[in-house]
Image 1 (cartoon, rainbow, N blue to C red):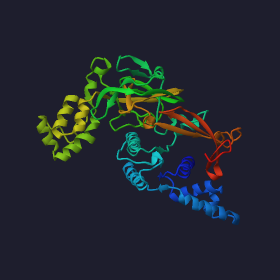
Image 2: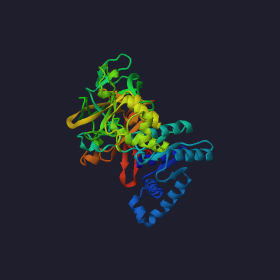
Image 3: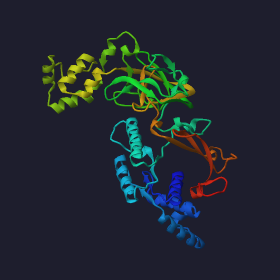
Image 4: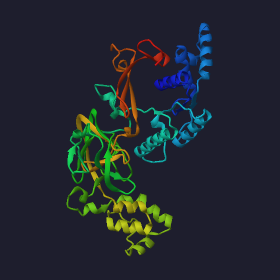
Length: 444
């Protein structure tokens, strides 16, 4: 927050461009105290407590007057949506003759969408933010939490895999290349770009060709092995999302008995299995019953239209054949159940999840579908795919008080779609929440 407030101050003061700050965590009063502390070199704690010395009042008054002239606009509306942000930013841009220097959002994990599934929700939010940036022709900078997994590593310097909602797979995970049909370990794809893989189209339930824009190593992390009843195995980090009937839970949110999406037999070049032609019984409650209620159908009426006997008050406690599931979907008019019946997926049961050591892990970026098939299992990709630029901050003295880099903050450009990556070192003055150039120049 301190870093982006320094950015906002410099854009507004040096370039005379308006900056729009959406703060979902801190109040506008708290942010103003930080800006003021940085401007006058008085500790923010003293400012909040009113402990200002007589000789500091003149400097403080001048700084308040100067800050009031900067075109920095802070909105601390809680639970604000991207639509509201776009509307307010567009209005601010119009008021300033089409000029707007930057939109800041603090922070991503506090934003809420309209989906019950957090991974899908974040994907929609990041895509919507990118759409807002393109529509308004203004850079949008969003703060994000990192995973707590970084605390368990010897090397605490952050990596892209540490993004809160991101997960990774071990290097021996097999990825099927859609063009050639070859199955290759994900680690051999590192450095390649724009290659075709298989991915799930969530609107149709079909497996289709998708372009992976990049493959990359995300460092060394603890991994777990997941195994299904059919013997499918995959090793992944605890935070890697898998496709289930309910959405995209992380591996550490899955339980024994949960069902995850595998690709169906004909897509694996395997002989069809009777069991794999089944739709799990637990789709009845979320899909068929609401559709029956919407149509006003009783269980007896549904069985009558199906031409089957009414067997009791708890129908379909067993799995449904795809043919029967589709007939039920047609009668009750449930497009969701029809999609499951016609999909390219088999929902296999998890029988074990075990710790599998610590090793180097990898991930793909698949724009559009945001998932891919690995070891014939449908998995989600990293959440960084929508960002053109990823910046991470690191202070060694936070973990090593005796480091020679005391007071130094590393600004790590971890990803830059249109330029180089690298690290810039700045001086950080925590008492004033201020960054400065190391050479003693103007405020960074």
